[in-house]
Amino acid sequence: MSQMQTTLAHFGGGDGPGPWILFLPLVWAAVVIGGVALLRRTVWRGGRGSWRSGPRVGPDSPIAVLGRRFAAGEIDEDEYWRRLSVLNEEFGHPATGKGGAA
Image 1 (spheres, rainbow, N blue to C red):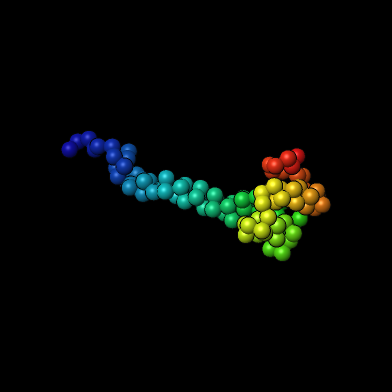
Image 2 (cartoon, rainbow, N blue to C red):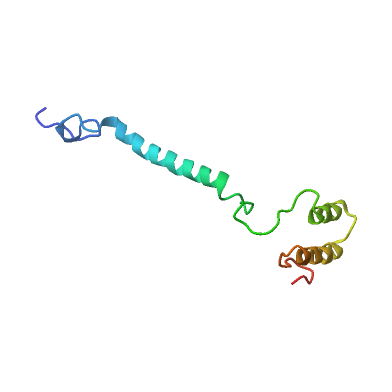
């Protein structure tokens, strides 16, 4: 064989990069996946990040109690939205949702 075939194992007649070059895309994929995982754990906490302004709603906050009462069926949807709009105004949140809350 007078002329060597150009393959991944024999690039340019020398040793060349060999089959290890196939791992380069895997390394980049690992870097990207690791970066996304890191961002999800620190910055992108589904809107719960520390960068978000406003008070946090704890398990004993009035808004959480109102949500539990609505879920238990103690109050209807209209009453829930009325009370939620009042609580949002009191805590400084803009009133959002449906049922006339603007």
